[in-house]
Length: 443
Image (cartoon, rainbow, N blue to C red; front, side, top):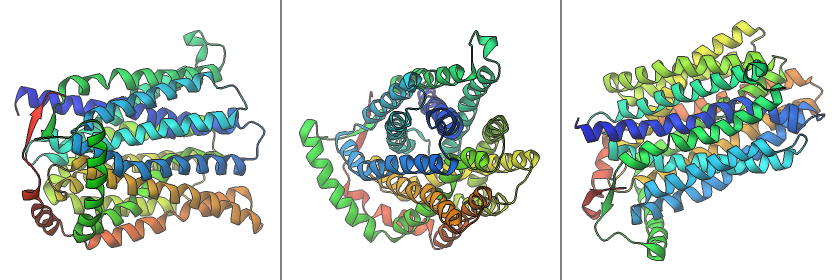
């Protein structure tokens, strides 16, 4: 790999290092706890869970509706990197503003959180679309996994610092743990912005000859979106894979976003849950790279099946855990497969889509992922409410709710079985001659 190629790969992977701080400290870690205990103080646990689930679903709806349109516009104007930087800084700035939200203002906190999730997830659409640009031939599985590995390490390092600050606020000259959590929100925004800069300077985007600009780019993007809808319907393997991904990644995202809330609902201490998240992060770093290697050896599809099987076991066993030791063991098992299933899904999809349309097609990829994220949290919340109405206790209702996620892994795995990678590559190749030649330009 040439030196400039190595710089591009490492700089691209560092964006995962940058924005994974939001995924760990905010989405999976402190926000669910702080939302339940600080911004929703005095409210029944079931009510705060429903509020969190509904806010997460609202963000998912906005992302799902906008991602394909933004992707099509970015491809027509070769603006993937510009869109990425815009959404990255949007997410970072609003995340930092959580520092200023007073206790009890749950609605304001949720509105800011929704904007931050939109910045995080929309930025990821364009980050994913740059994977084919930076990957050398035959290394896409490994490079995709490298990005997730960087994310686990970087996100875990800042999360560990924030946990230390929260558990020992006096060490940092702070008066209370709540002040430390608020400063943690600020630190995530700064971290996100700073580590986005390598991608800004060292990743070059390919441009299409005669690329549109301004309003012409918007018009061309909407026209291209209609064409892509038609193309995806005709490309059976892409259609099947997206349907499978829509289902199984919902289970993954739901476990990531609702695990802390679930742990609190069944009686675990917040500190135990934070330790479990740290375990997942640091186990995930080497295991993501390991899954990238496994995907190159046995094929991405087979490796994804292994991960789905593990998640199916997790979603059932999670309903029966009763000790902190079991919860930690569950965190280790999740760390084995979480980065792998995400990384190999991304690289598998990147191989079966047409060249020159990565942002557009990844717009659909992320759209379905976010539509799925609407189903999972609502499913857990709704099942919990129904069980409570039938007379079950709050803990039992939460346990029953978590098992419902297994249905998504079963359905997603079944559809994935029918996806033929070689046929998908051939289908994408038929569209190649219709796409103009591309060349690299400074971003």
